[in-house]
Length: 432
RNA sequence: GUGUCUGUAGCUCAAUGGCAGAGCACCUGACUGUGGAUCAGGUGGUUGUGGGUUCGAGUCCCAUCAGACACCCCA
Image (cartoon, rainbow, N blue to C red; front, side, top):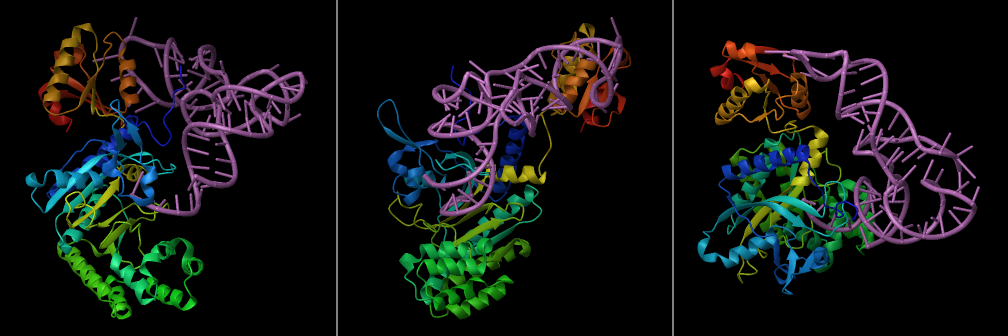
C-alpha cells in the first residue's frame, strides 16, 4: 500500500476550507452576473497543440499527457487559451461583445508557495470583442466590486498601459525589444527601492542618464490626474505613448462615471506585469495584507483571443485566484465562519418522538432552512446536543413528550445557551 | 528552475547519540430531558520514506517525498 499523500502543490479542501471557497466563488459569480457576464465551462483537458506556442517560456510548466489512444493532451494552464478556442470554434453562436466568466481549475507545474499551487482555481472574467475603454473600466469595476463584496477593507488597483512603458523605454533611448528586463526592474520598485532599480537597470546595460530619466517617470506619485499630466510632459514626443495616455484617461473617466470609489484605483507608471501578451491597459490589485505580491491582475490582450480565428479580437479581462483570495481572507478573518451547512440540528428524543422530529425536519427544509437530524434516536439527549455543538450548528431543536403535549418545539441557541418553547407552526419563522 | 530551513500521536510541540513524552483534541464515566466548564480513566506512533555510520539513531550522513521562506515568475 502506497503512502497516502497529495501530489506536490495539489491540496484537498476539507469542509471548513470548502465552505469559504464556495462563499468566495458564489460571491464573485453574483457580482459577475450583476454586470451581465455569462458563464462558460470548458474541459480541463485540451489537445496539447492548442496550448503550445502561446506561453513562451512558461510552456515548460504545462502538464502533458498521452491518453490510451496516444493523443497528446495537456491540462489547461489558464482560462484564457480555452476562451480563445471557444471564440473561434463557435463564432456563429457567440454575439460580440461577449461578457463571459469561467470558474474552474487550471494547472501549472510551478514551485508551490503560499497562495500559489499547482492546481488552482480561477474566477476569470473577460469582455471579448470590444476596444472601448468602458470595457477596460468595467473589468476594473468588477474587480473592485468583487473584492468589496468579499469584505476586503483596503485594496488599490494600479493601472498602467503597455505603451506607456514602451514610451518610457523609447524616450530613454532604449531598444524596445530588449526592454523586458527593464520592465521587470521597474516593476520591483516598491520591493527593492529606487536604488535597487537603478542597480538592476545598470546591470541590464542602461547608462546613468537613461536610468535617471526612467526613474524620474516611474517614481511619479500622487493623484491619477497629476501623474497623467506629468507623463504627458515626459512622453509628448512619442505618439504611441500619447495614445496610451489618452486611453488611460478614458478608462479613468469611465471608472469615475461608473461611480467606483477613487480610492480604489490609481495610475501607476511602475506597474509592468508579465507583459508577454498584454497589448493595452494593464492592472494589478495590491493589498497591504498580502506582501507576497499582487492579489490579482489582468489587462487588455487584443492579439491572444483571436489567434485561432485568424484575426484580432479585442479583449480585456482578469482572473481572481481563488486560493490566493482564500489564504488572504483566512488571515484577515473575512467571510463567514460557518463550520457546517446546517443551521439547525433536530434531535430525536426517543422512539416515540421519532416521527414528529423527522417530520419537523422535513417541514423546515421545505421552508428553506438547512437541517440535519440525529441518526441515533436511542442515544441520550446530551450526546445529541454535543454532536450538534461540535458540528457547529447554531440551533438545536428538542421535541420531547412535554413539548409534544403542548404542540411546541424547544429551540435552543447553542451559541448563547438560551432556549425557549416555540409554537410548532411558528418554528420556521423563529429560525430566520 | 536556484538557495535556505523544516518534517515526532488527529493538532501544537518536547526528548545531551542511550526506556518516544506533554498539552489540546478524541472515547468512556461522574451526569436516565441539555452541549461548552471541571475531575477521573482510556485509545492513539514502523519519529515522512529508503539507505548508511554506530554496540546503540527521533538525534549524525546520503538520497527521496512533502511543506515553509527568499529569488524567478505568476492567480
